[in-house]
Image 1 (cartoon, helix red, strand yellow):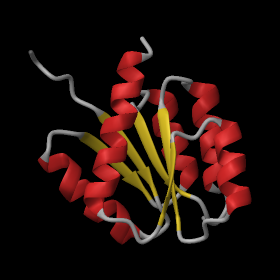
Image 2 (image 1 turned 30 degrees about the horizontal axis):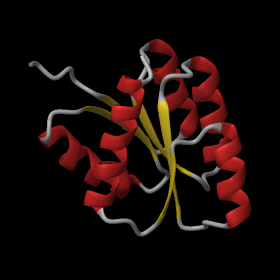
Image 3 (image 1 turned 135 degrees about the vertical axis):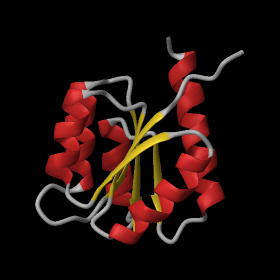
Image 4 (image 1 turned 180 degrees about the horizontal axis):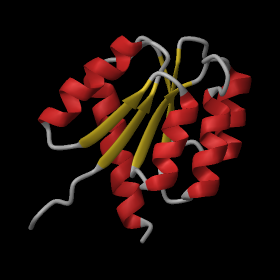
Length: 128
């Protein structure tokens, strides 16, 4: 059975996060694009949908909650994972209401993120 390529979008104002994730996920066969600003990332999303979006919560300009809302309106099937160093129960609850797949606190382990992404993809495929 051939596995289709998963398209992953990473939005984090810390360039090192995108760089590390790109190294890891491109090695395991993902098509990945990384952005340090949300606006160009949303333009990329509008052009060609992604399967999974990993976004930081706190960023200049457009924050992770706004990214979540825009992604959900563009493509409701895209799973959104929010990563943050500023996790609070209120923010996590609000993200749940907006349809976030998972809320991960920084620093997270790469294998933890990998598991979450695989679960998101499995749920997406199951929802077809």
